[in-house]
Image 1 (cartoon, one colour):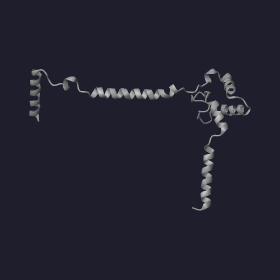
Image 2: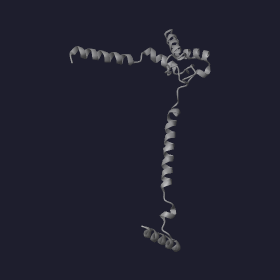
Image 3: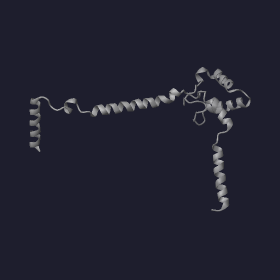
Image 4: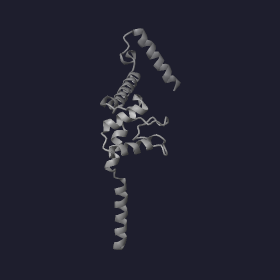
Length: 152
């Protein structure tokens, strides 16, 4: 491949990678938007996490957050502004560590139950493990074994 083709390929890769990098403005909007519930009524996500195309709530909210940040407003003041308009129910707290570990604890408890149940199910009953102590029972067992051998 010629040198200019390598240069064009490298420029394309750099341009694509550059386009994927979040801007500082985008990070600031995300920081505020993750504390606000999307008001579209369909997704149940946050303003920064809403992935609906043409969302009538999250896209304008992100634009407004960016404008308020450019005006020099602090994150808390921006949140309070939105909460006055949308109500206190629109505030989303950051998930605690308990909410992250709960699914793993449930999975561990479920697996432990399955192991316990399988082990218990495959254990032979105590009567099958212990030798027959009753002579009459031993005689019947021998008779059953002889009859089974005669069937073969």
